[in-house]
Amino acid sequence: MKQLIQILEGLGSTLQLLMRAASYAGTLPRQIGRFVEQCYTIGYTTLPIVAILSFFIGSVLALQSGHAAENFGPKQFIGLLVGLSMAAELGPVMVAVLLAGRVGSAIAAELASMKVYQEIDALETMNIPPARILVLPRLAAILVMMPVLTIIADLVGWFGGAIVAKYTHFISIEPESYFATMRQYMEFRDVWNGLVKAEVFGFVIVLVSCNIGLNTRGGPREIGASVTRAVVVSLILILVLDYFVTKALM
Amino acid sequence: MAEAPSTTRNPFTHVETPAVGVAVEDLCKSFGTFEVLKHVSFSVAPGEIFVLMGPSGSGKSVLLKHIVGLELPSSGRVTVDNRDAAAEETREQVRMALVFQAGALFNSMTVYDNLALYPREHRIADEAGIREKVMRALQILSLENAAEKFPSELSGGMKKRVAIARALVMEPQLMLYDEPTSELDPVMSATIAEIIATLKDQYRVTTIVVSHDRDLALNISDRVGILMGGELLFLGTPAELRTPTDPRVADFLNPKIDLQNPRFKKLET
Ligand SMILES: Nc1ncnc2c1ncn2[C@@H]1O[C@H](COP(=O)(O)OP(=O)(O)OP(=O)(O)O)[C@@H](O)[C@H]1O
Ligand SMILES: [Mg+2]
Image (tube, rainbow over all chains, first blue to last red; front, side):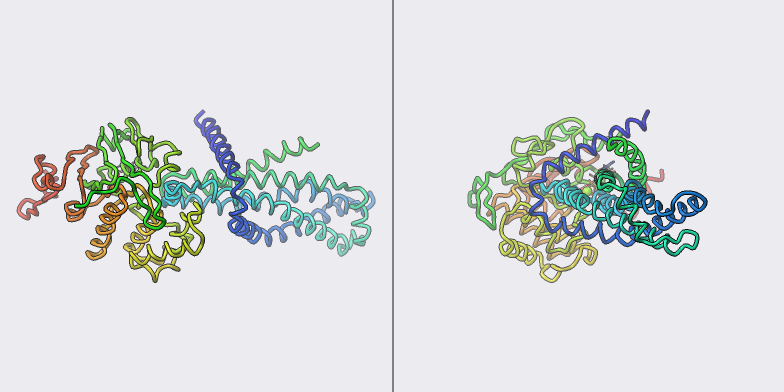
C-alpha cells in the first residue's frame, strides 16, 4: 500500500515537472549553450559504449542465426534477421539501457547533489526555476541525441553482423547478399518504429532521473540512493514501455 | 539623521521600487513531531534592519527559509510586502536575496558565473553591463582575484563573501543574511556591517540579519529579536538589549565564564 502511494506520488511529481519544463519551452532559443552542452555530454558519454555493444550484438545475432540455419533455410536471410532485430528491438532497447546507466545516473547524481547542497534552494530564491535551466535543456538534448545514437547502433550492428556472416566458415555469405535481403524485405517503417521507441525511452529516462534527483532529501547518503533509484526505475520503465509502445505501433 | 526615502533605489540601475515590509504572524513549524518554531510573531518595517540572535539550533535558519518561501508554515503566516511568502508569485514580484549559512554556491560554475547567473537569467543588462556589476560586487568584497576560481578552490570565508557578493548583484528589495560574519576576520566583518547599513540608508533595502555578532546588532540594527528554543524571547531596540529583563536573555548575551562551577559539570548532576 505504502509503495503504491509512493509510485503514484512519483508519477504525479514527474508529470508536474514535465508540465513545468514544457511551459518554459519558449526560453529554449536563449538556452542554446546549455542545450549544446547537454547534447555533447549525452553523446560523448554513451557513443563509444553504444558502438562497441551494438557491434557485438549484431555479430552474435548473425552467428546464432547462421548456426541455426546451417542445416536448413537460405543463409542470406541472416541479413534480414539481424536487420530487423537491431532496428525494431535491440537497437532502441540497448541504447536505452546504456543511457539509463550512464546518463540517467549522472543526471540524478548531479541534481541530487545540487539539492542536498542547497543550490536548488538558491535557484528558487533567485526566481530561476530549476525546471527551466536544468530540466528543459536536458529533455531537448535527449530528443535530438536519441535518434542519432539509435541509428548509429543500428548501422554498427548491421555491419557487425555482415562481418561475422562473411568470415565465419559455416556461414560465409557475401555482404552483398546479406544486405540485399535486408533491402528487399525490410521497410523504412521498421527503422522508424524503432526510432519512435528509442525517443520515448530516452525522454522518460531523462525526465524520471531529473525528478528523482530534484526530490532528494537529506545528506550525501541520499545522493547515492537517488542514483540507484534513477537507474532501477529507468530500467523497469524501459521494459514496461517497450511492450506498450511496441503494441501501439503495430 | 536624514529622513529615509520611501522607495528602494537600485544601486546599479537607479530604478526605484517601493520598499517592502515583512510580517511573521503566529508562525509554528514542526518537522515530524519536533517543534522548531512556536508561535513566533514579529514584523519588520520597510527599510528596517532587523537582527535575529539566538543559540545554535533555536530555529533561526528555519525562520529565514520561511520568509523566502523555501519552507511552508505548519500554521500561521508569513507575508512579504503583504503577499504570502509561501506563494510562488511573491518571488516574481519582490526581489529577495538570501545569503545561505553554508553559501549554497553553484559548484559547477566559476565565481564570476555564480554572480552573473541572476542578471543573465533575468536579462537585467547586456554582457558588458553585467560584467561591470559583477566586478564591482567582487571588488567590494575583495574577491577580484577569485573571479575565475571554482567554489571548491575557495576558503570558507571566501565562499561566504562570494555568497554575499552574489546577493548584492541581485539588487534585492529584501536582503536576508544567515550569519554573514561568522567566518570572517574583524575587518571584513566591519565591511559587511557597513554594506548592510549603506544599503539601508541609500537604497532603503529591508534587511534581516541572523548573527551572533553583538557589535553588529548594537551598532547597525534598528531592532533586535532573540529566538530561544523556537520562541521569540526578546523583541526591542538595541538600547533595550543592553538591559534585558528576561534572565535567559541576559545569560545568553553576557555568559559568565565560571571556572569554579562550569556549565558542562552542571549537566552531570
Ligand atoms: N529539514 C529539517 N528536518 C528536520 N529538522 C530540521 C530541519 N531543518 C532544521 N531542523 C531542526 O530545526 C532546528 C533549528 O534549526 P536551524 O537550522 O534553524 O537552527 P539555527 O538557529 O539556524 O542554528 P545555527 O545557529 O547553528 O545555525 C534544529 O534542531 C534542526 O535540527
Ligand atoms: Mg542557522
